[in-house]
Image (cartoon, rainbow, N blue to C red):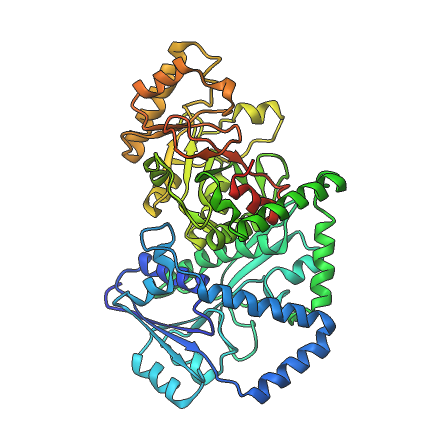
Length: 530
């Protein structure tokens, strides 16, 4: 850009998606100046009661528990502390956004009032961005010299309106769309700047697709703003026709939820679920009563492999499910990086469960699905990759044995970006070998090859190792000596135990997570009681 450009953002909610979009655009186009205009109307008690009565009539009795749940969720969010700036995702907090010298946030009671119009005109914006904004009127959206663009999580013209992905799933579409378009007076009818389609997976859920669309939306807005401000704007008229949708009733939401749950594979039998549910309920009740404080302090290290809605097996969790789990960790646990785990030779007492998150292998969905969710919730984590298999068309031995189709893997560029975000990257050997079964010279070579690749590509000099397969039988004392000799700073297993009292840096115990865990069962796992 030859001169400083100015962008105004119109919004009703400076939520995570807005913050990440602005920060990613700002990173792509340094030198931008931002004004964020937040529409925050004050509603009288009479109007609030009238709105609640209208919604109660539309939704029936379901509106009462739904609204109570909303109030509870807002209270929890208000009391939750933001992740520290040093945590992955710390740069996307509201505090971090406000701290940028080129960003000004202003809350107004009416985004269309004369004072708001004057403020926007005085700023002299080149481009307007509509992100989770109320319906904009021409006197406002026409102020920016180049116009205003809107992020719409739907494929226009067929799916104008709201909410993201809902009506596509309701109509049993096999894909959902995301569109950036120019704002005009009619809702979602402006010329298209750019558009992308997301294919529906075999076990897609509404929350999972909405999370995917969030990330697509960030990319599309960054692409659109860059093109427009660099002088290559695009305008593609929408096809004639289309349909505008409104917010569904709670009856429709319940119906779609039931339909989508019916597509999920069957979990364990009902008696087993009831027994596990009772155990989890008792364990969590004891924790809330403070009984777990009487136990020896412990650290729980969780192990994941894949986050995807393509399959449901013992190496995967769903996208929406993983988001719920990370939210539960942020709310109920004290989160540790693996560096902090290694420092905890004697585990300290804590009022909350001490939990760390790790991944093995190196599947691409770790980068596309898991990492964005961890950034959203400020979750530190470690990713152990088989350095000779990633960034190739190779396959992991367990995928070959299961006759799985070829699954995309991460590349070194993905790992470099993850390291910049603050995640730990470690070794899973070079070619995912069984360290106990292979000859000594093979193990020695694998450890050296993986160590050297991590140093060459990422600058890591003393990595951690998570040995493949992870069972007690897959590592021997002699092979562990080879790990130490190769300069590894620690070693992680995967046979399901808990680190109690102290942490052995060369036998950090982990427990695996998969799609069959309910939220309650997941929290029970985080207590480390079994």
